[in-house]
Image 1 (tube, rainbow, N blue to C red):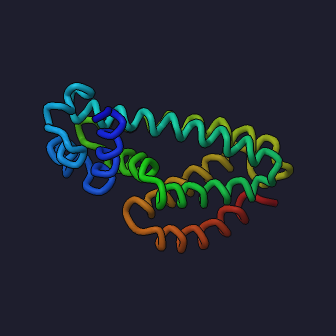
Image 2: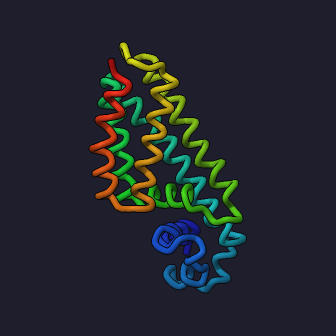
Length: 187
């Protein structure tokens, strides 16, 4: 038994059942240990979920840095469109990203301030990367600040489609709203 196997099972359980719907007993049972053994690694369920979240946010910050570096020579339209599609795919295929957005949009009440704060770390990093991308984009019909604010609003709305609806509803909303967004910021 390791802290890593506990975190992997907990990540899946939190993603499937939410924080309130997941017990340490369930996690322990799936790992093949007694509940008390979890306390050798984590003081509480809160510490377990916060540890997972911290690791996921760090992974996301690293992903964003690599993504923007990889597409730094791409047109802004391609970069932004690809970013939205990449997050959709990560949410659907990677439990860590599903966890990150679930906890950001539907956090445990008593940890809401913490999850809001850590999600803001993600947004601040994304904003700084977007600032550089928008600043180097040729001739847009909006200021970088306006383009970024509109993009983050689109991003947030599309992620809400994944959390509260389905990937199919994301796809429909993405197809419709992307055209309007891009038309609105380009010359």
